[in-house]
Length: 131
Image (cartoon, rainbow, N blue to C red; front, top):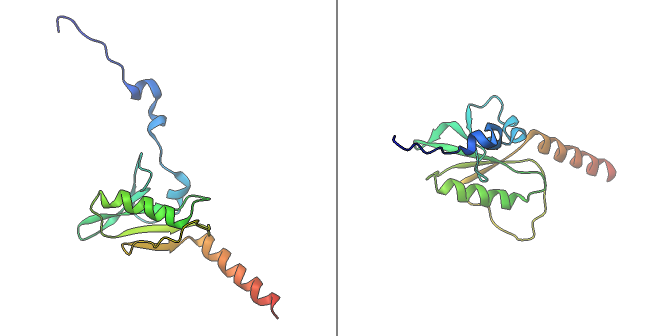
């Protein structure tokens, strides 16, 4: 206390918004489902309030332009460090992958409403063009 030292805070210097890295578009797909958003984690967007074997279930939403296998790899890598045995990946679009990787069995892939509707419309158009 005789010689006080002034320190600087990155939070005060950069502002709280610089730490808010939640993907709002991704979290919008989880509206109506109790969850906790995750900050500053590239592999996990949120944890569901429900648990599996006492561990919260991590959720990741596929980014636009990202192959599903890449999203699954990111989720699996991040979730394993949290000891999660079940994970949910929300698919938002069909993206071709350069590699044929298998999605780990711990990951449940769920189609977003937009992707489901797009696939139904595509199937309807394909069926009507063959008539």
